[in-house]
Length: 193
Image 1 (cartoon, rainbow, N blue to C red):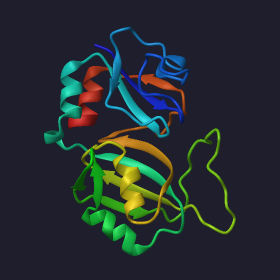
Image 2: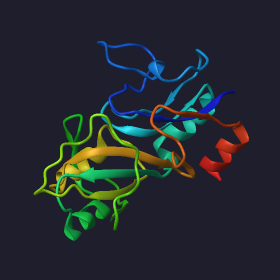
Image 3: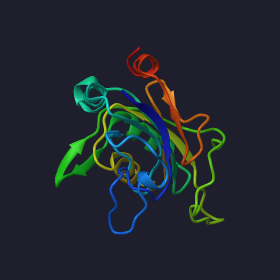
C-alpha cells in the first residue's frame, strides 16, 4: 500500500485526469497509477490531501459515520464578528443539492494574529479599507463547498481556504505542490489513534 500527504496548490483539480486544460494533481505529483486522492478539495481551495491505494482507509475517511476532524484556515472578507463566530459554532443553514441543510456544531475561532501560510499565486485581492481576517474552523463533516457556504451564510465570504489538518495529520512543514510519503502504521495512528 502507498500513502502520501500532499499540499494541493490553489487552482488545481483534486484528480489526476485532465479536464478543460486545468491543472491537475498529475502536474505536481508522480505516484503509482492505482493511487488516488481520498476525498477532494475544490479547485479554488488548497491544502491537505491524502493520496493512497488503500480502499479501507478511503472508506474510514469518507464514511460520514466516522466523523473525523478536519481543520480549515479560512481568510474571510471583512472583520468577522463574535456573533458570526457563535453562529458558525452552533451550525448554520446552507443549501446542498437544492435542499436546506443545517451544519453540525463545530469549533470556530478567529486567529489573534494572521497565521503563517505559503504565498498564493495569484494572491487574494487586497482592499486597504476592508480587512481580510483569518478564522479557524474545525468540522466533522464534508458537504460540497461547505466551509465557503458556512462563512457566506454569516455574512463573511471566504477569500482563501486552506485545509490544514485531518485528525493529527497536518501540512505544517509542507509547501504547496510538495508531497511526503508515510507508512501505513503512521497514517493509521495519526488518523484513528
